[in-house]
Image 1 (cartoon, rainbow, N blue to C red):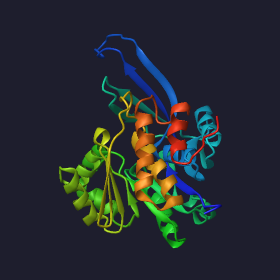
Image 2 (cartoon, helix red, strand yellow):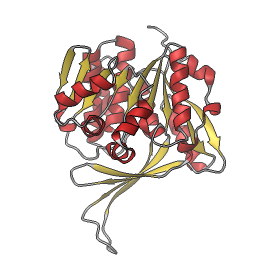
Image 3 (tube, rainbow, N blue to C red):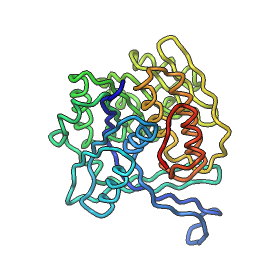
Length: 318
């Protein structure tokens, strides 16, 4: 595939405010820690990581007509992602507060910014039709808008012959909406790939053990390749009747923010070229391990990442 059509990620482009305190936060107290401002948004992260492993990618979403929005779009362009942006003059660019504990686990507070305001009539029809693959996350489905825009984009993708992937995004939001209602909303997606983590899979199915979660997910998405992210236990891929087990790396966790997005973007970027789920999964685990050992969803590329990508035939410019 010399000049592949791009992966298109549709959804959220935000700023992440990452905060990792050195000690417990006490009411009315003060402590030191690490605070960083970095580009984020699950869909945008997937587009960036597909681009970082060498696959052409585009992004469709809404941001505020403000400085944060301008900077967020500039960051995408600097990563080689082609942005197709709907500028919202009266709604600010989304911001996510990420609180990180000592073990690297994160809790997130998401503002409903411009990324929640995308509407069906604002979709770039030709951009979608000219893509190879559409990726959406449940952040585009939890509220309406942008739900109708995301569902319409999936319809357009299907009509144009694109493959579709879906990330359930948040076990807490699935629980708040309710399992049956979330299933109803997503029933018509008919995705080719589903990327839950274990907690999201459990919330979707009611099953507990990873193998049981996969079996239940196969009933919900019978045509999809299922990629179950298991954090320190690696990942499982169910491709038809083939079960692939992927071991986690030995990277020490610092911040889990964006690890799942990087897994998804790296997997899709490799798979859309190679059609090899094992090789794509192995690359995705290496990328996610590198991310989890650093702050933010898109840490600056370093020699360690270049070495890991080079092993799989990718060369990232210095």
